[in-house]
Length: 116
Image 1 (cartoon, rainbow, N blue to C red):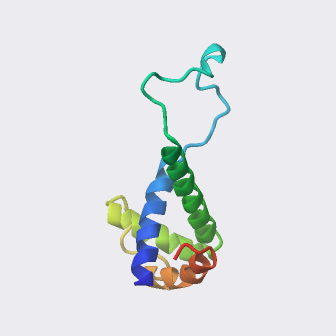
Image 2 (image 1 turned 90 degrees about the horizontal axis):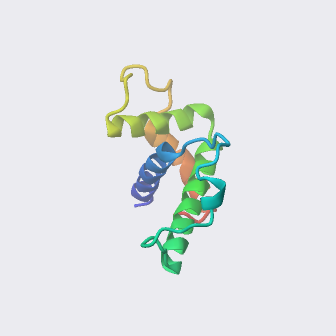
Image 3 (image 1 turned 60 degrees about the vertical axis):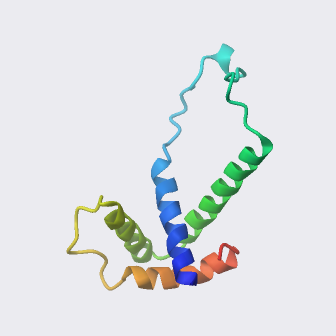
């Protein structure tokens, strides 16, 4: 049960982490339009709280993955890419570390953050 929850969290984290783009320190809007809101784009409090909760959860998972030894986080990344059909290398993988071992290593960290 916990392994399935961890697997689902890691899938969500992988999708979230692929959406991240670096801020190149360029303005996205003209200075006179920064305070403008779109007519139909008002977000309710529940939408804002849900987005904030999701972002905080994904950042906590990101911290857990990054705190693993490199070969474990590599095993997680390779497995997620395989599942999305984006992996190019199928033979090498990780030396001595399987995805199951990586999930077993991250479980205590996820429990410590109360994510599972």
